[in-house]
Length: 247
Length: 345
Ligand code: SF4
Ligand code: SF4
Image 1 (tube, chains in turn orange, blue):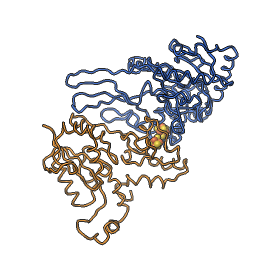
Image 2 (cartoon, rainbow over the protein chains, first blue to last red):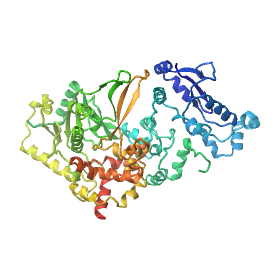
Image 3 (spheres, rainbow over the protein chains, first blue to last red):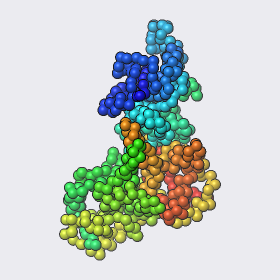
């Protein structure tokens, strides 16, 4: 029997789900091995009976945290997809401000309404156990497809634990630092094939900092390029605001 | 074999003729740098390049390649080989020296048929350096010219009078001559002029100056295992592997399997790896033989200057200078490290 798969979204732009829909021919291959039972962006069915839960988005309200816990309880395997789900993503920038203030800025007079109550942004694995992560903003559908195939075959999906520079070098890109830009490649988990540097942009760090990212080194290296550690930190927080404020 | 003397326009016609008949890869501009790529216009060839971002090893040992296709249920596999003939135009002598090292490595012990199939399919046209790159030190490593080196099929040298000396050195090289067979033969004066280019390149390809002979490196390193330089410099190391990946003599790789959607058939991939990456020396069970940055940082220099010498008689650095420019933290200059070890011995 094909595994039943449900796709859920929390606070995000739903661009990662869109990446799955954009898989085109591969989508049919995916559907030949899984049985989608809930997927708001693609179908109207809903179900509480599934094996694999794919979750996008970050958690910004208590009621969403509860919903996520219920999903976790039903799913045998939970895959978090996209920077919002794996890191908290851009949404996490609000954690730099008091909650009452952001609520007021965004909702104005309506801020007091109970369903608009907000809490500091959390990544999925800060609320429940996550079995696999597919990083990126947006995700690369090829990577998700590799993870699902490995999972169905019973092997552990391999995720890179080395910096983006590896893929950037393999792609024979000139380094963004040679053009006076601050690139987060040396600190960021690879896996996107150096998408941004290959198209002439610096790396924004959307796949998350490496477990052993040498941020201290990066801060010192800025000087060699006439840039400051503060400028580097400003770039880092876009996707990688630390898990606890002030950390 | 007849050495010929041709002017630049005949060179252009000759390259155009090669492109018309063969698969040709040549050095071309890439943004404000240079790279080997498929050549479709003779005018795009840049024999005046200083250095390419990646060395030509990518044509023999690609960043990623499929080694075999397998079927998990039938328990069968089929090896994949790439043997389509091609011509590489514009390889610098130091890169040729590195290819010769790879030839040795990939034929040692277990012969790597994937590498060797690509290598045999290649005709390599080396071109003497016309512009020194900012960090090159091939002149210190004995690889500024092709004198005393082999492995290539043809050598092109731009002489000071603006003409090219074309020197086919193998049957494959001679087979490329085509219309050049009717060009005038290079006389003694031309050969002398080439010698002058070589002498000059030996002097000029020393933008970094190694203060010892390469053959002294194994001995120097033997006494430098506990030198403070490793810890000091590794502090700024990102463990990004750039210095490995751009190196023409680095050949380490990793293997990975990928399944098709039938979850039965798939392919085995070989991908570049590097000893500066944290996971490189990690083994099953989670142990990492070089878990610390400084351990990895030191290992790279020992590998370049000592271990490969002991394993197959080569210093695994030809002086291309690519690692120096590729290191964002500016700590990967082997000449700086080796000179310091010498001074503080
Ligand atoms: S552009 Fe960024 S990712 Fe690429 S090599 Fe430079 S620092 Fe690394
Ligand atoms: S290129 Fe520089 S920062 Fe990167 S691994 Fe090599 S020495 Fe370390």
